[in-house]
Image (cartoon, rainbow over all chains, first blue to last red; front, side):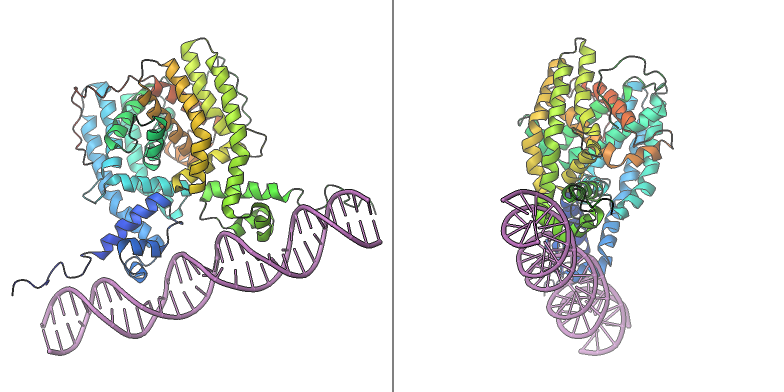
Length: 236
Length: 236
DNA sequence: TGATCTTTTGTACGATAGTACAAATAACAT
DNA sequence: ATGTTATTTGTACTATCGTACAAAAGATCA
C-alpha cells in the first residue's frame, strides 16, 4: 500500500501543544490574561481543556511557556542587531541603527514562530498593563539586560545627555511601541484613513524617526528650572 | 449623652457611593477589570457586595460611572489649557505649551477628585490594553474630539509636517504617557535609582521635552525611500 | 412618633472558573 | 501483535464569579 499515516500526520493536529500555545498567545494578547479562560484557549486550539493541563500544568505555566518560547530568540536578535548598529561609522546613522535594533525585533519576531513577534510584544504590553505577576518576574530578569545594553549604546552615541534622560526617553519608546501594537486602529481612526495603524513597516519608520529626534533633544538640566514656563498648577 | 449623630455623620461612611468608586478606580487601575471582583471592591471600600449592585447595578455600570466622573472635567481642563497655549506668541514655546496642555491634565486630574487624574489615566491605559468594550466605546466618543483638537493645534505649529506624521507622533505620546503611569518602577530600576519613575513632575518634564523634539523631527516622506537603510529583513 | 423612602446587609442562585483524575485512544519500540 | 508510553478525552470537584432579592437598618419629614 501507498502510505499509512505512520510517522507524522497521524493525529488531526500534528502538534497540539503548539496549537495551544499559539491560541493562548493570540487570546492573551488581545483580551488579557484574566478575561481568557482555559476553555477558551482549548476551543480556539481545537483541543480539550484537559489537554492544556496536561501540557502546561496550570494557566500560569502556559503563560510562562509563551515567554520562554519567545524571550531567547528575540533578545538574541536584538543583540545581533545592536552589535551591528554599534559598528556603524556615521554618528547620526548609528543612533538610528541602534533604535532600529531595538524596535524591529519587537515587530518582526525573534524566531520562526508563526505570527511574528508583534503578537508576543503586544502580549507583553497587555501583561504589563494588567500588572501580571508571572510576567513581571520574567520581564525584569530577562529584558533588563537588553534594556541596559540599549541604553548604554544610546548613551555612547549621545554622551552629552544625562543617563537619566536616556532612561526616560527609552521608557517612552517602549510605551509608544507597546501602544502602537495594542491599539493600531486608533491611528487609522485619528488620521481619518490616511494612515494604517496596523502597517508594521510604517509604524517602525515613524517610531524610529520620532524616537531618534526625542533622544537628540537637549538635556533636561534639573539644576536650572530658571526659564519661566506656562503656568499649569501642579496639584501633585 | 453628648451628641447623637443626628444629621450628617450618621453612617460610618459618609458617602459609600464615593468610597466604592474610589476603591474600584484604584483596583481596576492596578489590576485590570477582570482580575478584580465586585467583592474585592466592596471589601476595599468597606462596603457590602450588594451595595455595589444597588448603586451601580452591574460591574460594567461601575466602570461606566468612573469614566463619566472623570471625562468631563479632564477634557474641559485640556480645552482650557489648549486655548491658552494657542495664544502663546513664540512658535517654539507654543508647541511646548500645546504638548503640556495635553500631558498635564492626564497627570494632575481634571477635577477635585481625590488621587488626581493619574489614577484615572492609568485606568484608561489598562482598559485600553485589555481591549475592554465598555471603555473602548466611551474613549472613542469622548476623547477623539480632544485628540483631534490637539493634533490640529500641533499641525498649525508645524505646517510643514504631514498630518499623518503628527497623528503617529501624538499616538506615541499617548503610549509613552500611559506606560509611564503603568510601570513607573521600571524607570527607577533602569536608572539604578537615579530617577524616580513615580515623580509626576519629572515625568511631565521629560515627556514634554522628548515629545516636542519628536514632533519637530523631519517629515517622513514616504515617496522617497531612497537612502539605503541598515538592512533588517522585514518578515511582515 | 409613625410613615415613607433610601441605603445597607445577608444570603442564595446559576454560571463559570481552574484544575484534578480516570478512562480511552494513539504512537511506538520490541 | 503486544506491552509501554504519550497524549487526548470526558467528567467532576471545589471555589469564586456577577447579580438578584428579601429583610434589616437608617434617614427624612409629616
